Length: 107
Image (cartoon, rainbow, N blue to C red; front, top):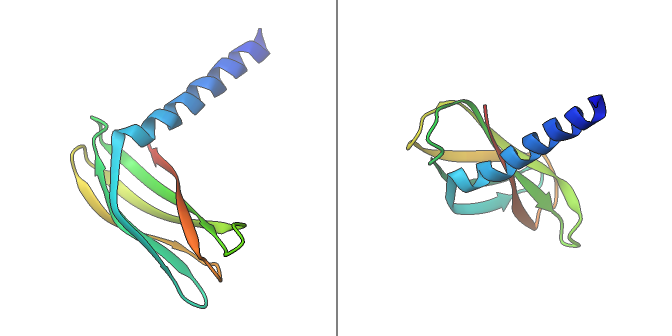
């Protein structure tokens, strides 16, 4: 029974994270890089119906061959419902050629 409860808890957490992406509109996104770092900038609107005391947005960064180089993340405290945030997610990698949205987290 203990393992079953752990499984259900993990399933609820995974489902919650999957739903979070639908509750935030991310737009006007573009990425740039230089010899030492990469950044992804854009805007995100909180449509979740709740206030986030801590909000995180993360992107995966890739090289020319499609290999993962790392992540770029941005953090915001007190992200209110219906608020728009102009974020800048930074990653300390060399050779970023592309990026993909990875996740949002609202606590």
